[in-house]
Image (cartoon, rainbow, N blue to C red; front, side, top):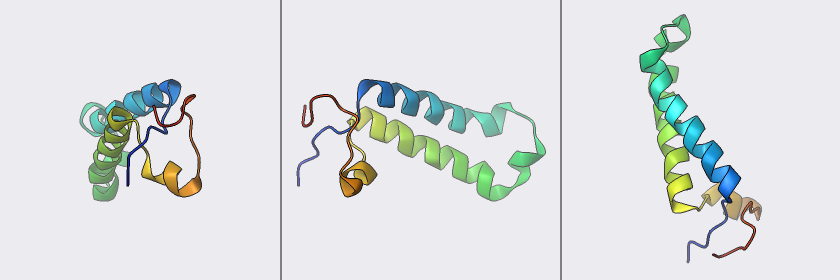
Length: 75
């Protein structure tokens, strides 16, 4: 199975920005929201997944759904 690109440029930038925010927020923002261990640990994990899919330009969920935000699929 090849990992053909299915994540476009705008999608990649959004994934990177949101991923970095999800990793940093629990440590930077002092809020009762981050006292919940599921959110405190889960947010950075989701952030890492977003950054990984942005860097690989491949999203497995997009593959399952048959979706693509890449202008030239497979590039």
